[in-house]
Image (tube, rainbow, N blue to C red; front, side):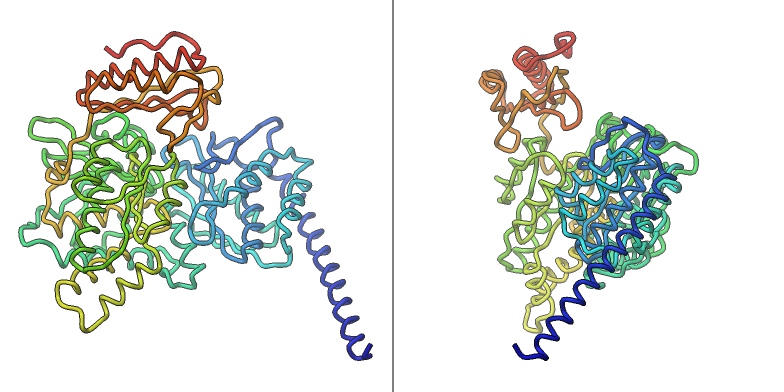
Length: 573
């Protein structure tokens, strides 16, 4: 063997050994730090937690150790992906005394599922086993500990959020990671920052100011196309901020709107409690306006949830009846608008609306039969909807609770841009292409975002010259009812067809089918809860009485065939 070559091999081997040694030294140093810091964030013995769709959520007093450990996990995830990771401290629509935490992956999406189990593993390791659990993740994922780590941290307005977000920052630092503390931000804003950072600014500027500028400039461009019948008093919108972070951020954003949208802000956090008798969840469940909002008949109102990733709209008619426009109505308005623009622009792009089994049957019927839009049904849970929406050029998804967004494929964005910039494009096509381009920019594609969704809805209503009553009249919701049945073990229920049919226990689906046949335009399904030993029952039919009767009869079938506990379900009337 050539001597020089032999020496270069030796050099490489020695380098590798030195590398290995330095990695080990790195690791040992980090582990000493982790040990020292971890004792300042001790885990209560025997406490068991589970990372779910919403991350971890619990009473704030039980979360300090979890926050520190999620800081550790975020640093590892960053080293593994060689990208910036986000950690958001919030418990969304939960009561004020709770808090929670979720991790954000590089493109602003939810944490990869395999890493959810690492989160659970780290959170549940007893104090003396933490280093072992940490080493386990490092080895399984073959993480290079000398790789740099970058983590963005944000928090909501809960009183516990400051000390808990500090525990996250401590965790990141213990593994030698760099962190940027964004302080008070909405959950969708932090998702947005992470994506901006990891696309090197292609998606936008990773600052709160940059977020307002991008969204509001696009909104103003859209509003410039408002219909001639759109009057100034239609610029007014009442917003219920749920006494949370959303109220704070809407207030910050107002100057960027250049008076093109005039917002009256209620439940702004100055006196009320977070999510208490207000917010999107309260309005959706109680079917009534939030406390603390003054709104005249026929005027538009909307409610955010506690961390501003959900929105629902509503109004009261002249008879004082409350009308809710939920995620189904929002998805219908947005997809109809997009479908019309694609036609005007003669763009051959495939658009679809993604729903779950909870979507009102009327909305599905309207979209498929009147609008001729593809509708896809998936299992419940944002990640399933998001994933299905990615299969199309344009995917619109909203859960009935008001959480949702629109996804555009890269190819779709390119086609829209080419058409908008092509000097040979005729006026009608160019106008449609520019509207599509601004729609892409007003939407936060990373996750459901109440502020961004609100701006898009307001722009669509102005462009179409539509009142909230006309929007509501696109279709009439079928009466529906949701009930819960306590069972000894929710796992006896197994479903298929996007949770619309029960496979087990035997005989249950047959029972549901025969009950549904008794009523007009009826539909019913059951699914196990993700968190507790209850089975959720959904029913809809032509009239409320039929709906309630069907829901009760299906509950009885579940109680009898799936091991119900406690008293037999009582009729609703």
